Image (cartoon, rainbow, N blue to C red; front, side, top):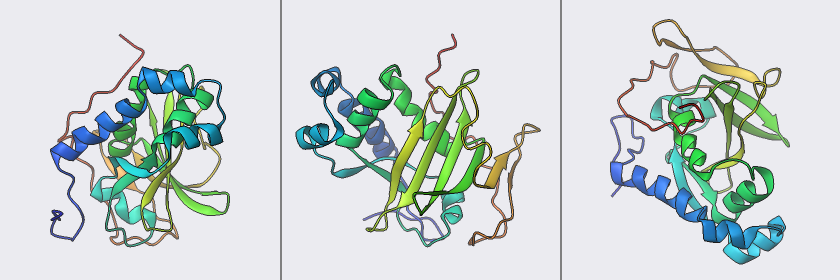
Length: 207
């Protein structure tokens, strides 16, 4: 039975967190990437399938920013999507960097609400390394799940700098986080700053 906190939201166990990271690395094995090289997205989907599986989670403090009642804060993606993304869109990105997805979700510099192909989406933005930003865009699919819709890596300029509505920003002063008032409905009037209670390994180019 799923564990929930006092406001009824899911709690992700440590075992699940490890499983998320392992799943991404299993999907992006050298064998899978080599098999997928030179193939179209449709061919990759045909070879590997694209059943949605959890690969990360959104901290409970940010769930209200999705503007709806979410009971499952896991972020879902498919094997075919991930392999196509790595091979055909980010071939120069080390696969280990995909583990930064959870870092971006848990410790974002900024969160924005954007319209993408007519869908309401939430973008988590975090700068990792100099001139390197990682963006995650999540949207609810028809099964009421939160789905990884898009991600960017090694961007020289800040993605979505002039697009969307800023919902959250992390201050550089004292690590204080603040919520931006917008027309997007939220369950609470403000969100507390996240405590750094989880040590996450950031994969960096800088040694």
